[in-house]
Image: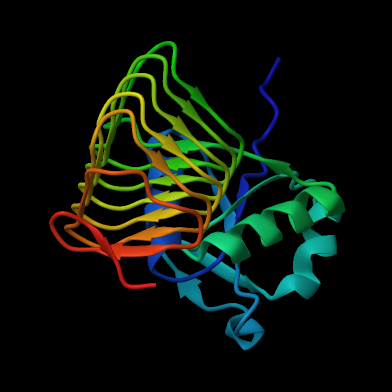
Length: 214
């Protein structure tokens, strides 16, 4: 008896981060059904990242009718990513998780639907990662960290042990968060910054040590 054909994963987004998502999916032996560009639907039919831009949001019903149920959001804006992921679920899609095979993920780590763990990232023991979160290239999320929904942990960023990150927070490339700290929801820690104290919600922190600029 032949195995059923995989209709593939629909990627919402067709720009830089979508390439990272597609690479993680393919290396995990998932087929890409196509890319949706909600901003530029006129790209329909354009080759992109080894597949095709199938159009804008108007194509979602066509995808469902074609049997495509698995989807993931492939862009970096935290708020939009959370909103569009909810839209996909409301329309009947299942959010999948993309974990690159070269990521090092502990056996007991929990990673939510729609999240992406990129190449070289480390997700340590007893870590919990929420839905629609990005753990980008070479990022290190150490033991017992709790990372919320719609978060972006940038390339080579480090969360030392037992850090808590609120929903839709952004930890920039190369930033470091000291152990046992809390990063508030929707806050931003700039690239290369070092947090040695808790970061309040909606704050923007930069520098070494990190200081608020808003």
